[in-house]
Image (cartoon, rainbow, N blue to C red; front, side, top):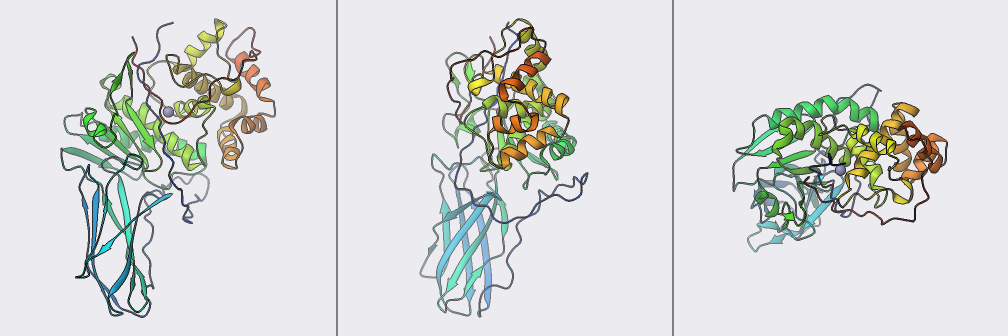
Length: 412
Ligand SMILES: [Zn+2]
């Protein structure tokens, strides 16, 4: 069967040290889906000890793709500044620190240069502040300031709402921004009901016309590999967004209602507690379940597989999310979530993920919510798909899936 797959976006994740910082973003009454994602971390008050602190200048400069610089001109009535720290974050869960230099005149500077492991795309948000100590031992934390890692080397367009920020290269359709804003707004109550809360930050969607602005911060990205394998996107909870090469095929609506809704669901998965290195069908099927625009009917394809008797089992990790049959994991996973919804109700998603958030594996969570062993649940799922002999085969353990990255496939 050849009606498979054209594009498959990568869902790469690089975990850095995660520092949770006591933000209480629990959503209130059921049905209240006002986003709380735009709330900046409050600036400190009542600090500075016995001294009076004066900030003469607090500046930021993006040198994209080579990093960014911070500088501070500050005085304290407690004497010279003897210690300085700089802290910034792209999302509330990850904090980064620099090593400031205090020059003899008292001017304080810090620079960040991207490395292989910590590079971030253009247009990530930067919420930053300084921590200081003067000669008398007074400590002071500056107000928090918001900046962006602007790419001033080419022309961009931008749109934002309560739900999302979108940046797209000049030359791409103008409709990209409004389409993404609308898709994210429409899907807000769906994410809310499925996850029980909204993200505690506004995700960013960065859309490229070519692979150049991608590979310049993440070398090797977007290039074609032998066999028509091509990566067209990358998503990370560390910098809180997704970058995507624009694919003409689906147009702005395909990007907005397909890719973006899928990738943002991965951000919800991380926000829920993380993504495992196995059971990729569970994660990719889940993200696919949030797509409104699809290239083809995933469920119909899986029903065809079931009817032909050639439906890969989900036991032992399930089908691979890589290689020429990668779409199997996505489509069967998608169908599994559809079965869960139809059989156990619309709140089953939240229940299963709630258990995953508590540390259960996906399989344990499914067994708990369905009240069945996983092979029993899978048998029912395969029967629901119309398979005449639904008992899954006992397969030998398959290769364990690992993030990152999943490549993208171009159909023949
Ligand atoms: Zn995905």
